[in-house]
Amino acid sequence: MHLLPAHDGKTELTAAFLKRQARSLYWRGWPLVDIQEELGIEKYQTLASWKNRGKWDDASPRQVIEDRIEAKIASYLDRPDFNEGHMKRVDFLTRQMERMARIGKFESSGKEGDLNPRIAARNDDAAKAKRADKRKNFLTLDQWQALLDDFHDRNFTYQAAWWEQRDQRTRKILKSRQIGATWYFAREALAKIADDVLAGQQPRNQIFLSASRRQANKFRREIVSWVKRVTGVDLAGDPIMLDFGGLETEDGEPIGGGLDQVGLYPMSTNSNTSQGESGDFYFDEFFWAQGFAELRKVAAAMATHKIFKRTYFSTPSTKTHDAFAFWSGEEWNKGKAKADQREFDCSHSNLAKGKIMPDGSWCQVVTLQDAIAGGLADLVDIEELRTEASDDEFRNLYECEFVDDSESSFPWALLAPARVDSFYAWRDFEPAKLDIPGARPFGDKPVWLGYDPNHQGRDDAALTVIAPPELPGVGKFRILAKFRLNGLDFQEQADFIRSIARRFNVTDIAIDASGGIGAAVLQLVQRWFPNVRAIEYTIAVKAALVLKGQRLFRDGRVEFDQAWKDLMAAFMAIRPTLTGSGKSVTYTASRAGGVGHADLAWSVLHAFSNEPLDAAGAAEGTGRVRFAVSD
Image: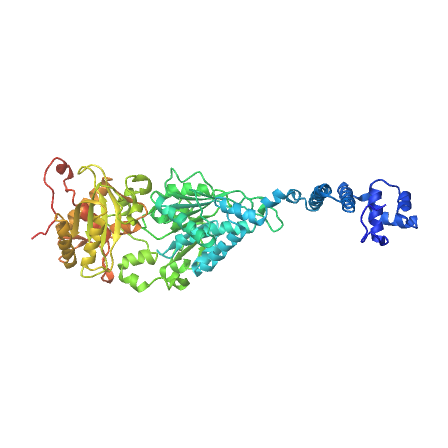
């Protein structure tokens, strides 16, 4: 009897072949004695030895069935009358053998994909890649690693030092402008997530607080563009919720046992909306936030649990800002017994490398010179910046010195209430259209333009776009847009004003015509806007401009975007000073270094002057006060 075919059908059965024949008969229930007789095996002990060493009794049902299928296939293939019907049966039995093979693989691995080829196909590399392309905000482990590698490759030395301090519970960083802090911390937030994911740990939500929603969205733009450049993935949503489902180790196990989603939350500094989430937070330009004391309570609540990290970073504003007490330690020492109070040395010399302060926070001061020494040298020309700013402005913006606004004509306290989150407050203004040629950001609503030209060829000129109230003395002035014009001659300045005027419904333009450049710009503008107003400075005119501006701010009739720190600084720079004779008071801003300051503020005041000083009288139909030369 042949259950399996011999090699050529004629040769004697080999020992191996006999062994397989014997095993097959045994699994079909034959006694060893009958098998010995059927196969002509000389010694019973030989057959018993095969059974014991081969562990025939330990065979699984699958192995027995596989053997039966194999024998059946062999019987069909050995038939001399093998036909198409037999072939169909062989094909069916072969498919059953494939199924048995999958069951055998499943018994070893325990993976359902080995049992069901459809499941295996859904989980192979090609299918995972296809699903990853369709999934929202999903990055593979390789993509997370690529982001982390790119992050470290592009950091300057001082930014790498910030990364080393990322696990500090609280960081406070006073920094120069334009050294890439917002750019860095946006990427740091995502790099921390990448670090956790690659280590198999649950990441934390990352929250970004800024003076306005528009500024907060800068974090989002930085992250989205970075991820797109490195990985090709488009992150979407507000907030951006990152999906970690399906991330597996090399052994096929879920990363960290499975990670929950985390979000990237851009928020404006509004105590009514900046709450409800928990996670690490970054407070951008906290020295410029209105109502900082209340906002800090809300922000701190987001990071109540000790696992969450808090990062405050900003350029300095004024010593009267309530964040100064938080930075200087005055707030921490307040109410403590004298013996328990500690000195906070916030000088640059003490904090240039960063240091733990008495309140447990890690603090650092990073000036522009520090950043240049740390790798920024190829991106900035410090001498050029010195010539483009007054000494006071340079120290404030680039050397981390606070402004003393106690003598300012427009102190912080007067200006702060005018700051709004224009993203929410001004629904009729679309600032994104400023970047679209020919688009009209404010439709056909009227605006006034104020212009402060550069004087004697010095590089300081500013143009502002003001939305006036519908009636004089009623409603608010909104400062919609601002432009700094540096290095342009009088023709180029006039051309720029005209390009902006074409985008708005301009009903008034006011230009300082006191100097040669201003007079030249005025004449060019007058060709296409005959009613342009000339502001010719005298002591009386300057006083009227300042008094009008102070009155508008004091009455709560001015609004501008919270993120405009340069406009705040410009107004705070205006101070009363004695004239050369010492007999009169005028208003000036430092022009150290041969360059003007407060040009943005003066341009706004020029536009404001189109509303009469006696606004109530004008509303009743009386004449307008004109600003002109006094003899």
